[in-house]
Length: 315
Image 1 (cartoon, rainbow, N blue to C red):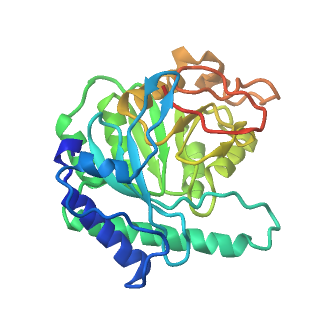
Image 2: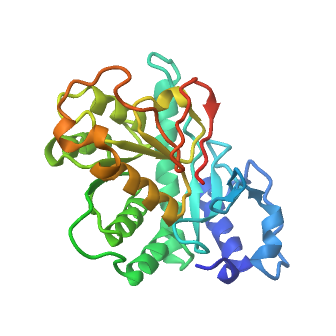
């Protein structure tokens, strides 16, 4: 939905559903701004936290959030963001619970339980938004499908999309199919590894935050495997990521991203002509340290492997 068509009432309804599911009638743990009396959504934006991304003077996708929390976790967010299509906005929930846990961490099981609980809560909220007719990923998917294919002819290659959120996976699939790619989808790491072994995709587009096996673990298993260990991997995340975790990936995208950024990156990594070092006939060669170039951002720049915590923005 175009931003000008998002109304203050839609925002109020989205907040109401969020609070109802997150707190069940108990007072919210975080202050909620007064959204009454607003004439347009533009009037509401100063009351939200602006997380729109800017890098080297280039505009990224626009994103505003309300950190409303829930009864068990204080940092979950209501998000109004521009995703894939310029000017098209959706409501979503950011669980904001992606902090890493180390093996043997005594708090690890409890932290994983909170993550699973937050994910279930997110799905309930977004399902109610969709039922209420609020702009969600489902509405965006309808808009993408109406646009139809941009390219016809033989497939440019096969992309494996790995994301546990089906609405996001479906939108990415629709975009890539329209651009001429064959698309496979996996909702978890185990299924992704099976597809890599049996389908030999030309690129793996992998979500960083997934329940169970996280994106970085899937990367590591592909690289240590006996099969297509050289398949390019594009890691996508909305999280703050320690760059040392990206050593197994060939590229890194920050969510939310726009269509042109996603397609441009996929074309560069998935086409054998653009990446001769990872052509299909070379994939069974032993992988030595230094064989694979470092991860790259959307403009093709190398990501330094200094282990520092940074967010790599798309341009």
